[in-house]
Each structure stands twice: as C-alpha cells, then as structure tokens.
Amino acid sequence: MERREDHYSNYFVQSPSSLSHDLEFEFQSPTRSDSAPLVLSCVNEFPKHSDFLRNYGNKLVYEDDEKMLVPLRSSNSGWWIVLQIGWRFLFSLGVALLVFYIATQPPHPDISFRIGSFNQFMLEQGVDSHGASTKFLTFNCSTKLIVDNKSNVFGLHIHPPSIKFFFGPLNFAKAQGPKLYALSHESTTFQLYIGTTNRAMYGAGAEMDDMLQSRAGLPLILRTSIISDYRVVWNIINPKYHHKVECLLLLAYKERHSHVTMIREKCRLVS
Image (cartoon, helix red, strand yellow):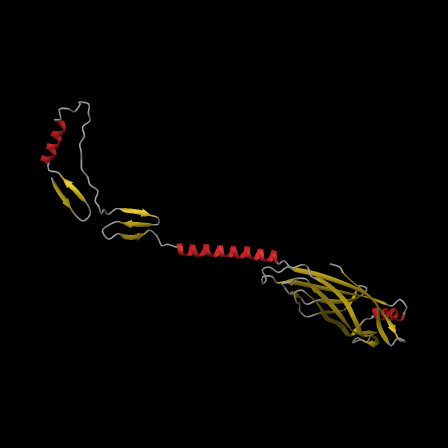
C-alpha cells in the first residue's frame, strides 16, 4: 500500500494484491457467523489542512495553510452602529428634555392692562380731499401693559401687542407695539401708545362731539390682543399663551370744553 500526498489532501492507494489479502482475511474468519454482514473497510483520512470553506457569520473562511479570509459581501455594520447610537442619543435627549420641562414647567403668566392718559383728543371741523365737510380726529393715548412672570427660571417673550380703538363698531385707530421681554420672577410694566392724526370721521365725528359735550360723555372701547411664550428648549418646547383685554372708557370735556379727559375706565381679561 502506497501513501501519496499532494498540496490539497492526503489519501491511501491500495494495490490489488493487498486488497485481495484483506478480503480473504474477512471471509476466512472461522468464528464469524454466516449471517454476519460483509464489511469492506476503507480508510479515508481527513486532511489536517483541507481546502473546504466554512461560513463564519458573514464571512467565508478559506482554510488552507495561510488561512485566507474571503468576505461574503461588503459590510455596512459601521453605518448601522452609527445609526443605532444616533437614535439612542436622540431618544435619551427627548426623555431628558421632557423630564426637564415637567420639573420646571412655567406657570401661566398674569397679564393686565391700564389706560394711561389722553395727551390729546381733538375733533376739528374741516374739508376732506373730495371737498366734503367733516370732523377730523387727532388724539394720542398712552397705555400700560403689566406682565407678572411667575416662572423662576424662564423669561417671557411677548409678541408685538395689537391695540385697537372702537367707537361702537367703528375701528378708528389701531397700533402695534414692539416685541417685549419680561424677566423671570418679576412684574414688569410696559408703556404702549396709540393715536391718529387728522382722521376724517364723517358722520361719526359729529356724534362723538355731541357726546363729549353731554353729561353722559363719550364711550369708547379699547381692545388689545397679546401672544406670549416661554422658550424652554428653543422652538421645540415653547408653550404659548393668548391674552385678550377689553377696556371700556368714558371721555368728557373738562374746564369749559378746552380739554378732554377720561372720567371712567374699566379693563377686563376676556380670554
């Protein structure tokens, strides 16, 4: 029997004479039962360094003497790990911000409004651009916006307030204030102004002048709309509050019709 060996495997080659000898040995055994199966043994030795491929995870292992690694496909596990880390970070950040907001949730701010004074209120007779005779109104009024920020942590951002004056259904003056900011845990008063110059009032002008000269006085309505918000986390968490204030006021002539003054004022928060 010869043993041959090459680079890929080890195997045995038996000569015909030796194979015949082995068969005779199997058949001539005096103690073997007639019913015993005929066993033809064959020796096959697995090589130590065989060239078969094994699958380890996502790579084929080429097992030869040099143990070369052959990848099955291009791996994107690095991007997948980065994506997982990113999602976990965002989730943790969201939970942390939510807990922070709940722990420091700012209370609803208190808003109040007051009429300051009428520095000027005049109704004068004139002619408009079309030649029609009418009353022209010129007035200037100061107001006070009082903001009580009860938050101990966050300042209150106030959008430009909208102020409108009405005589009955007629909106004869409007103004928009600037952006405002109320510091945390403080009560802040802001001055706002509204007025108009030479506004043609037509039929309403004569009616307003008559009421000013009467004992009842001239009733006017001032409506203010305010939006405020706390910027807890930039623009992600910023609770907003809408405030509407309505003031009823009464004007009358004072000192022989030479000066108009406010004789009554009542402001209330409508929403």
